[in-house]
Length: 89
Image (tube, rainbow, N blue to C red; front, side, top):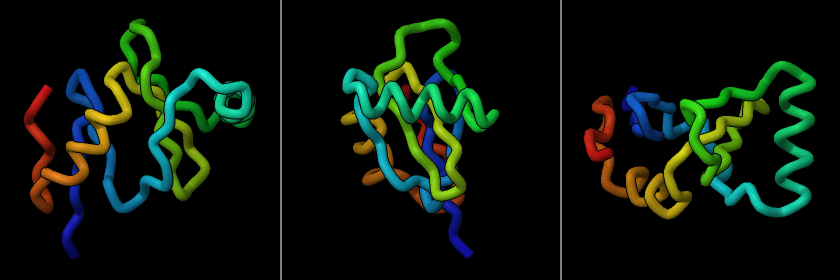
């Protein structure tokens, strides 16, 4: 089984096969998704105190906040090798 791991910034890594969407956090519906995940205890803040630039939604309902651009995360999905975290930062 090949598990692709994607670096989402600051050494944080997610399993590519579990990601459903990568979106920008500016819209009201996405802000509601973040708020709901926080209330459910399914929010993971991987921004290290920086501004949230990408919101990653997983198939388990977890919501992950990242400080890198959604386009950058998406490009890492396209270039990652199976089993190894993407090493670009």
